[in-house]
Image (cartoon, one colour):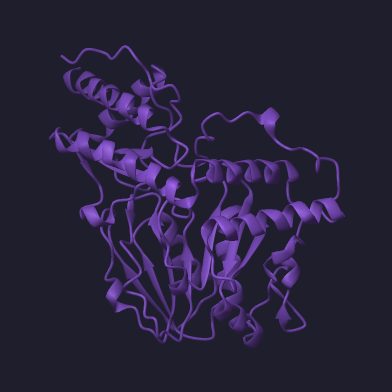
Length: 374
């Protein structure tokens, strides 16, 4: 029988969204000068514009890429992109987990595009990415948050493509290197890798996406919060601090705090390094225990953020194990996503400390033997 560990992770928050706040986070340190002020005041607009500019700087975006803050988290940003941009060309949709399947459902059942092709795979696998047609638009997730499977790189995306690439990268931005010249639209949310607050999405547009917006009018009605153009031209204000609807300036202050933290640790490269180091600790543990494995079947496609694991236990025992860890305050919210195979999902983004991952591993081993033997 395995002995219960004596030391718990200092921070047991391993949720895959909203994710753990940055190390040392203190709400009293936020700059709250904008609270109670109009987001359209000179101060409000300058702070919102700064959030967009700092994002572009820290991500190393090409100079002609635009960054905007939009409603409804990553979901809102993706819906805005799909409803505004699709329909001009056939579209190839690649999905291998819950959120990617959601985009496929929207394209087939809501937008009802009759020139859409779907490429799907079961949890743990990737579809055939090489099937992408450079003449078609492409919709895909960079990292499957609910499956722990990510695309290994952008080599499968043609440099000579005529279609657009629309990429949901919500659990990849600031955690995985992205080939921006291959991506025409990228979306993400603050509550993932940065450990920020929910309800706001980030929309990044490359010049090819802007050209599509200004040359293509969708045949369906667009709600106000989806409208990116005005009189046939891009609404540049969205990307300069004039948001479509009212944002939470408290959440914006929190986002800016997150960006300051990224800068303080050494920028995007350091954040990616922290996430990869966390994954390496779990890989070392898995390699020495035969009762646990990665859901991602190819090591090259393993996510370094939403790390999904399988156990040689029945589903009911996995649920008991997750509950046992929460009961002992060793790990919160690490059960697999509801649509995914039973297992563990451990967030390993940059805001999670390596020491906490180290301390979590013996707790998982102890809990496994507890439920296995009882």
